[in-house]
Amino acid sequence: MESFGARLNRMVAARGPLCVGIDPHATLLERWGLSNDVEGLTRFSETVVEALADRVAVFKPQSAFYEQFGSKGLAVLESIIRQLREAGALVLLDVKRGDIGSTVAAYANAYLDASSPLYVDAITASPFLGVGSLAPMFDLAAKNGGGVFVLALTSNPEGGSVQRAVAADGRTVAQTVIDEISQLNAGATPIGSMGLVVGATVGDTGHDLSRVNGPLLAPGLGAQGGTARDLRTVFGSAVGSVLPSYSREVLGKGPEIAGLRAAAERVRDDVRAALSAAS
Image 1 (cartoon, one colour):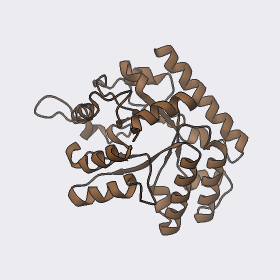
Image 2: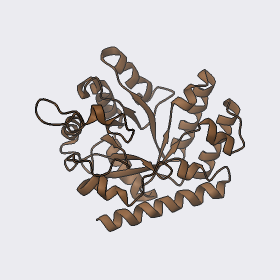
Image 3: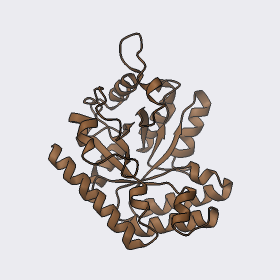
Image 4: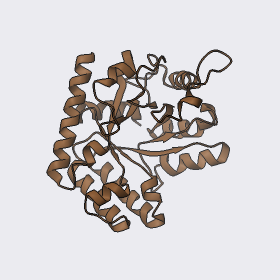
């Protein structure tokens, strides 16, 4: 089976370096003239699919915005995942799961087993219980051609107190996470399938990302303050592995199909120009 890293590399080459986050929060639904309920959620999600599913490389639905509506919301999420994948896009589900033993294995089965109704190409995961605790996710992802993006350096102000704490060996917690993911990707071509999440607004991180050999998801671009030009500062020599992620900067231009498409094209062009200048 083709690895997630290889599929991601191919899809970015074909459609451009862009991930669009699908975050249907109440304020955005209101801006679209939609109700904050399952009906509004459905119309919002289906509009995004119609406008962008065959044009954008990767989509990142935020699971919580669907989970809050219970089983009906999850049914919408299942449908949207299926529609996006049928259009050829990769789906990175933002769930930030993390646990141990049989529980983390169950999370892996929920999202990374092809028989699951919530099966996606990749998920986000939290390493707070230790990167090694996520092994069932890594193993099942590798078996089924999936990927896992592990939180490393997030842009929220609370994150630094944990992520930049220094361990006994002198490395920060974040650098430990980075190094362990680097080991999982060692020798993979064209790129490994285990990625990291590094916020686009964190600035010069002071961390070494050069050996990751895997995709680097960069959320926080656009409305959250990050710009395409910031990517070189944040990622340095690893900028070629960055998957830039925009949400409100694109979704805020809806509900018109033309507005969504124009916004996606604009940010993709901005990213291409920035990455070209950095190379």
